[in-house]
Each structure stands twice: as structure tokens, then as C-alpha cells.
Amino acid sequence: MKSLKSLGFASLLAAMTLGGAVFAQAPAPTPATTSSTATATTPDSGQAPATATTAPAAAPAPAAAEPSATAAPAASKIPEFNKPTPGIGQPTEAISLQPQVTDIGLFAQKFDTALIVIITIICVVVLALLAWVILRYNRRANPTPSRTSHNTVIEIVWTVAPVLILLCIAVPSIKLLARQYATPKPDLTVKVIGHQWYWSYQYPDNGDFEVVSNILTDAQDDAKGEPRQLGVDARMVVPVDSVIKIITTSDDVIHSFAVPAFWTKMDAVPGRLNETWFKVNRTGLYYGQCSELCGARHGYMPIAVDVVTKAQFAQWVAANGGTIGAKPKSSDATANSPISNPAATTASPEPGAGAPTTATENATAAATPASQSATN
Image (tube, rainbow, N blue to C red; front, side):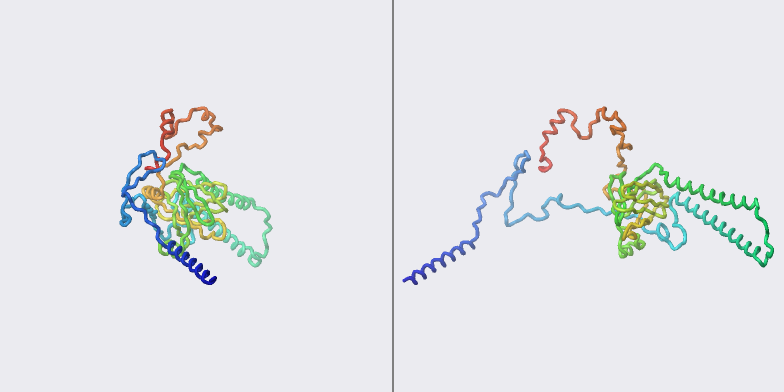
């Protein structure tokens, strides 16, 4: 009897378990759709709710019906104007300076030629004097040596001649240095920042955008026709026949911005702003490199300067999101300082653009809904 009761109890438990499993697998009931329209509202918009018709579930809206405003705009390509010119703006096989394209560089090149002529004359004269002394006053040619111990003419000559030579060298040297460091009124300012190990260029006169320049690989140089280890992915672009003021600095170690064809070299020191300038006379692509030992990849910091026409420069600035003629409102940043101009604190300031100045404007500004841009 007990075994029958146990068998019946086990059968009841099995039936309950099977029923629970079947109930769990049953699909949830689908609510019936009572209306084909729905009401859509924007929270806190302050506008009346808008009624929108919903499409049936079996016929979803096509992808083409989505608003075109959600599509991302195509990025504009940054133009590159000039191609490398062999022998111009890059290293050559000649044992001489690179061809110069600035007035200062042309002056320095002439001065370099003059120095070569001067040192050649000095070497020839000294060599001739040595040869004359060796041949004329040796023991066989002159067994009885001269007893002359003083000669006024010779002493004056060997004192005055070096002084005149140094004057001939010093005058153009000082003139060259003065022209290099006396920056005229600039047409464009570019801030050059050295990093380990790449360059970046900021254009504060054109919206303060920044260009980051990295070295290309050898394969990319070959594909673009660039000199090996001198090509970059983003060039520094400046207009031709314009005074370009260069402000150099660094964010890590000492670098040096150098473009041989411009006769330009200036150290980039962390925490310090150094200044130089150049004015290029012809368009073209000119290369340089970091000329200060700055670390393991010092040899992989090339400089590429693309000198273009003013119209091309405006096109390049627009492609980078900058503007032409975006000068600061005041050339003197301390004009409104209470220290340099105490009157600036007592004078009533002019209302700024868009700032409410009257009670009516204040009330109107306060009544503007905070979520208006969201509802639009």
C-alpha cells in the first residue's frame, strides 16, 4: 500500500513539473493595436504636442527617408601646391651653400664668397712667404745669417694688415647679424613648436589653427617624389614676398628650427620664446631639419615649407578652417590693464556683442526657453 502511495505522489510531481515547463515556453500575448496614430512630445519644450502617424510594423521606413542632416559632411582635402625642385631648397652634391631665396640669404652668400676670396689670398701670401724664407735663408743659400734685429716697416705691416683684414670682415658680419635680428613689421606670424620628435605650426593671425607635421616613410617619399627623410605629411605654408615672423619654442627639450635656403636657424627652448624672420622671393618647396641634438629620433624631424601665392595661401587657410585677416582687436594686450592704464577701470565699458544692456533686454533674455535649441 505504501508503495502505491509513493508511486502516485511521484507521478503527481512529474505532471506538475511538465506543466510548468510547457507554461514557461508559451509566448507572451501580443497587445492589440487600437489606433494607428501616436502622440509625440518633447519634454519641457513648451510647445503643443505633435501628432505623427506610425507605419505598420511589417513595412519599416526605407533608409532613404532619414533626414540628410544626420550624414557626416565630407572632409575637405588640404591642398599641396608645389612639388620638390632638384637643386632648390634641398641638399645638393655641390660643396657650397644651398641657393638662397631671401635677401638676407643672398647677402650672406655674397659675404661667404668674399670670405673665401680673402682666406685664399691670405693662404697664398703666407705660403709664398714660407717658400721664400725656406729657399732664400737656408744654410746652404745663406751661410752667413743676417744680424738684423729690428725693422720698423715690417712690424708696422704685420700689425696693420691683420687689423684691416678684420675690419673688412667685421663690418659686413655686424650688418648681417643686425638684419637677421631686426624684424620688420610682419605680414604673418607663425609659432613653431618643437616636440619629441615632430613639429607643429600655429597661425595666430588666421584663427589660431594648428598644423602638426610628421615625417613620411621612405615608401611615401618615393610615391610623392620627396627627398628621402625630408617629406612630411603636413607642410608649413606661407605666402611669397611677405615678411614672416617665426616664434619658436618647445614643450620638452631644446630643438632648432633651420631652413638653409632661407638663411634661417633659431633654437626652440622650453619655456622661452625666440624670434626670427624671413621673406622668400620665389615660390617653391623648401626643406630643413632640426639642427639641435634633441634625442633618439633627432634625425627624423624634417621641416617642409611650401611658399605659395597669396591666393593659394588663402585657399590653404580656408581648407584648415582658418580665416584671412583675423587680427586681434587691439595690438597692445595691456591696453585695458588696470596697472598700465588705470583709467580703464573707471571708464564705463562698452557693451559687448549680444550682451543685454537694458531691463527689457534682460527680461527677454530670461524668458527664452532653455530647451529651444533641442526642440528645433
